Amino acid sequence: MASRASSRHPVPRQTALQTALQTADSGNNRMHEQWRHQLDYIVTMLGYGIGSGTFIKFPFYCTRNGGGAFLIPFLLFTIIGAMPCVYLEMVIGQYSQSGPINVWNLCPPFKGIGLGGVIYSWVYCTYFSVIFCWFMFYLYHSFSDNFPWNNCDNHWNTIACTSYNLENTTWNNSTSYPTVNETVGNVSSGSDGINDHLSAAEEFWRFQVLQVSDGLETLGGIRWPLAGCLVVTMGLLFLWLSQEIKVAGKLVYVTVAIPYILTFIFLIRGCLLPGSADGIYYYINPNFERLKDPRVWIEALSLSLYSLGVSTGCIVTLAGHNVISNRCLKDAIVTCLVDALTCVFVGFACFSIIGHIAHLRGLSVEHFQSSGFNLAFIVYPDFLSSLPLPQLWLVLTFVTLMSLAIDTLVPQIDIIVAALGDQFPLLRRRRRFTLCAVLSTVLLFGLVYVSQGGIYVLTLVDWFSYFPALALYALLECVVVGWCYGTKRLEEDVSMLWGEKIPGFMHVCIRIVCPVLILVIIAYSGYSYRSPKYGNYIFPAWANVVGWMISLVAVLPFPIVFTWTVVTKRGTSVKEKIQKALEPTEQWKSAHCEDSIHEMQPMA
Image 1 (cartoon, rainbow, N blue to C red):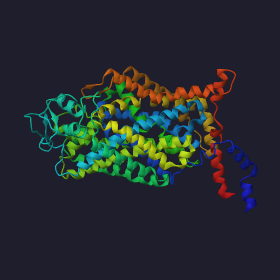
Image 2 (spheres, helix red, strand yellow):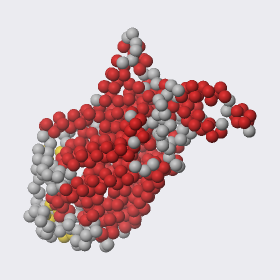
Image 3 (cartoon, rainbow, N blue to C red):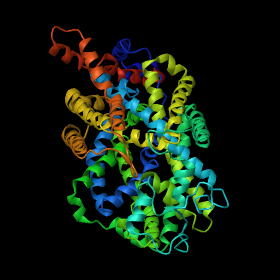
């Protein structure tokens, strides 16, 4: 047996691998946990990609961009834009077996991409955890016999409050239906001025949940019920993430399965309501005239990239837990297609409901636009309260939204913890301490968002945090891997490890198509830039300055790290320093060696 083992694994090759490993970081890669089963990884990726934004952002983008017309560029860009980027990040993450920063050992001056992604993830967690708190707050009230958003008899209601009964289609304080402009203004834009009509659901959202102040200049006091929900949220995240990945990877099956089951139930129930056919028809019937508008294409591309978390470091971090022999191409195709088809599936359920509400309010589906928070916290509660067994439908809805939100938050926190562990090995051995410290900072800054003026802060941060940082980093990823490191060299690495060649389609997309598309996003976004607003509230000029400073926080790590890496490199000229700096480190070159020895050890 010994002779057969030695012939299968020649001694010289094993010695060479061991020699290569001596130049690597001390145990940097091998300490990465691995998924118990590959399906755990796929389901976690899907949970992160789908997220609660599928129920909130996707219907709004479809309504605003011509319904079915939006689906055409969305599905197209998922294939030629998002899928190559996802595949790229899966490959380099799995190959390096590390987090979002150390993965850039393949081209060290660009480690700032990973650091910027980690900063964005932390900023994102500080405000998205508050959105989770709002879901929790509504879930609590969903068990009530008398829903507080259903009537105008509460202490927070104003004389402008109008209790709209969807079931009987009457306005209690009005003799007629509101006009289209009044309805769109009150339902879709989170209005912050005095209106002729404010629905009871909107007054509950603004004057009880948020207790919204006059503007960003007045933060006001902390909403302690929401602060309590925030503490519970941090506790849930700690309990989830403190488990080993082999345990946590199983929990996501529940949180991903629940939304699929409940969405199917919502679709069946929605299709039985009057007006639902109009909503679904608007959704699947493309208005090709809208495709002449460049904004439709830009928003479709942006949503396809945003939905899958490209350049945030999430894909890299999750792929880093894969076994080294996993085939990434199949994972990328499955993840992107299932994510896109899930969005389409959810769209049917949402538009059946939107069609029903538009029918009751005497509006066309095209004129009924409800964006962001108002869809989740005004339209959905108002509609579901009118159904038989409203408590059941409300609980199911907010459990679904919470499940999707937790699937988004968990990988984002894991990105931060993984990055800290890669840079400081001592913290990796004390994972629970690191996790507790990260969640404490998220909780501390999250308190700002649960103040009375927190909605303005959240709107400002959300407006500026994503662009231009992540768009720039997505562009740099394609340029670095496609041109600096080279897809040919990457293909050699991939072929040596798991015998898989990079398809020619991916070569072209990574090197040419994706960079061009992302450049178009950056150019058009800069050209069409407008200042943020929340409803009728216009942010002051100084708030825009603060917003751009928030953007720079995630952008600055790139030029700083790039400059520092080049300057500290030995060389007689700047050109020589840059050439040496762009070379992969020994840690990257030997990343696969460790796994080869690890797989050979049981057979030796």
